[in-house]
Each structure stands twice: as structure tokens, then as C-alpha cells.
Image (cartoon, rainbow, N blue to C red; front, side, top):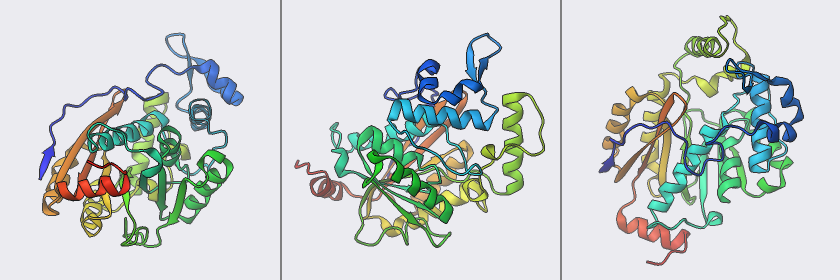
Length: 322
């Protein structure tokens, strides 16, 4: 196994990220006028969004998608997680870089690329950005029927997403790829933002800390947008067990995917992740640091394909003849 495990941490957004600079609040207020009600001077006297208010955060994300990505219709149930757009976009930009590196510096044609989002969620955010930025095709899976229904409504409401995103219900909560991909299916990459917590109590404590950090206020019941539904944030055994189980199952689909990947939020979980990958005898591992502000994370990507199998994949799917 060749590995790139020791890349230094960084906190700057990707060079292609549309939100590397400060938000253009004037443009965002034009995109979503309701956002203006939630913009107030911060402690430095500059205009800022009230990030402690989940309504304001959702309106900000709506405005970002409208202004920067051309997505005019984006809504989902209040109990579901509201994603930070810049961080989600960074994951996809780094996966684009990984595909480019796998193709000798040439970006594979977007319409020939299919990604699988394991746990697409009600907001469908990764496929939306991947389609808008790169023209990729997506399969989005989720164990929650209501999340799939919500994502379908978003796709139906935005012409640019139609015929690009295939949403599939995962009927077995213990599976990641089985039941979604058949033996014939091929995907060029998978992405996943795993549940972070091992219990509902742990998730609630984290939400209370987040609200206190943003607003300075203690609250026993944090707003739902900071909690999300339990399956979005909670998995028995937490992130470590979730990723370990995903890696084990990925072996069964070794020839169906060029690059598997997942976010690993807790740095302390990396050692166990690498151990699991060694046990599965993957051929290649990449660790890509990502981060926004003071929050750092990393993508771990792995492939089972030999050099010859990679060559065959490029020629067959990306139409690249070497």
C-alpha cells in the first residue's frame, strides 16, 4: 500500500472555492431579501450574519447557492442539518484534484464522472455543488425516506440538476454500498460525511457547546438546525466505527470504484482508519487536509485498483487513451 499520511494541516479554503473571500453581503441580500433581517453589526462594527440563529444560517446558505451556484430553489425540513456551503464545496474541489492527479494532470470530462454520496441528506448539498461546479453525475443514497423525498423535491425544482442526480433509498441501515450499487455499477468516487457522535446525548452536548460559542448563551435545548435528526449525527460507536464498517464493506466493491473517500473529523481516529485500510489491503491511500476558520478536518481516500486496472478504467470511462 502506498500512502500519503503525513501532509501538514491547513485551514485555508481551496483555491477554486467561491467563498475564500468575505461574503458579498449586498449581493446575497439581493439573492435572498429575507437575509437582510438577520444581518447586524458584529463586535468590530462590520456587517455580519447572526450565525447563532439557525434561520439566519439557512437563509445565508440559500443566498450562497442562489448567487454563486445558480440554485434558486433549495429547501428542506427544519429538523434536518443545515450544511456550511464553503466546507462542503472544499471536499468536492479536493476530489476533483484527486481525479486530475489520477489522470496525469488532465481533468476527466465532467459528464463522464459519477460520484456516490453516501448519506446524501435532505439538503442534497454535495451533488448540488458537484453538478454546478463540475458537471458531474451523482448517485445519492440515504437510509431516511423523508431525506430522499426532500432531496428529490430540490432536484425537481432546479432544471440544472435534473437528469444529473439519481437518489436511492438505502433500505438496510447496516449497508453502505450494497443495495445501492449492483455488481455492474461503476462510480469514479464516493464521498461521505459520517455521523460524528456515538449517542444522542453526546450530540446534544456538542450542539449546546456550539450555541454557547456562537452566542455566549447557555441553552438546554439547542435549535434543531444545530442538532439535525439522529441518523445524521449519531451512529453506535461513533465516527470510528462508522468508517471502519464502511472500509470493510468497500472491499466487496473494490472493482466498482476508482476512489472511495470519507471525511475524518477526529484526528485521533486516523490511526484506526489506516489500520483498517491495511487490513483490507488497499493499493493506495491519500490523506487531504481541509479546514475553514479554526476547524480542521481531513479527507481520507483509498483505492483497490492496480496500475493496470487504473489504466483500463481511464480508457473505458474517461476515454483517455494512454
